[in-house]
Image 1 (cartoon, one colour):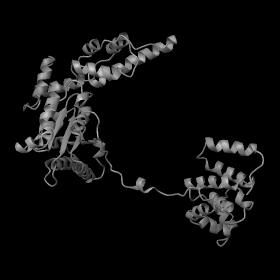
Image 2: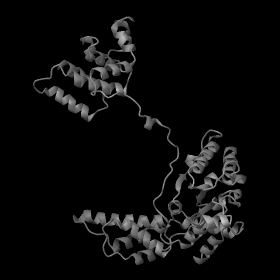
Image 3: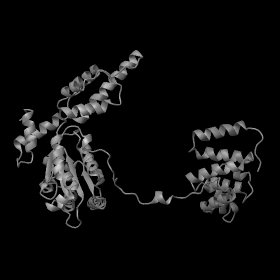
Image 4: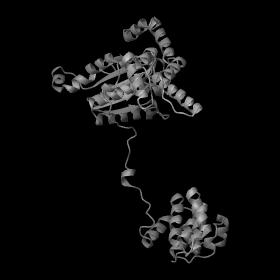
Length: 427
């Protein structure tokens, strides 16, 4: 095989075109034909191999591969574009070489290419590590702890009593017969950090963390949802100590008395069974549920031994708001910002609302920099403007909560919520 003595401008243009559109197989095969004609068979093999990698049944690519490997002499017909299947069947009898080439297993061409051009054409194979079974749910090891959660001291104290203290003091845990299992329901307005808090609990415990959403469980086929739930709990038991976080629990554990869908009712029943640990032990599995609508959850889920502790996660207090402002502004250019003033103005805002305020203030500074042509810092004026334009997103939730507290059945579950609404003079 001989290399061309001088650059061919047509080949150079085709090579550049293939680099720009690597998935255009007809263009790649046309380049391969030109390379064969120019005596550059080695490069033609590479392009034929790429084409076969995309479509192993491509008759034109296979014919070119056979031709360049020397099994059949390259003929004019083999270097022309592939003809329609009917014309090919008509022009080539069943016992002709072209028919045999078309019926050949593509793997044979790869073996021939590897033997004649060792190291040039990589073999097609599947890595064993990549083909091994992958878990359907992620098992994480959070690096954050409760120290990263600003404020919410009453929430931290409750979590300490429920989970953290027994795990840190195994001898006292055994002495008092405290089980290393449990369930806690986090509820409150959206955007107030329930998911972040659950991750912090796992990080504080040094435990693994499995976040589960409604889409991870519910399935269109009858029985699959229950199977998904069982697999998730089995994974948590195998990963113990582990925090299993069930998000949007009101959608998964809806009151069965209000559910007409029999499939969803059986899913709730399966969840109750898994929480009981009647068949498999739940020791070392800490179940945290989160919801914005705790009054829609089936009461059986909150009985002792299941999600028996309910914890209200309120909008951030003053210290927490300062911490959230500081965290969202630390990577941005700021100047003359008063965090205490921002925190006071954001009373009643959720953590997500505060993040939105910081994003809006950054947009104001960016747009002003574009207009003036000079980049400037984010100032207190930008934050004040953003605060005046954004209203708390938790207001609709507070209205719903007030209705439940005032007119719903009060069994003491929402005592903390009632006190909070009274403090804000909403009841």
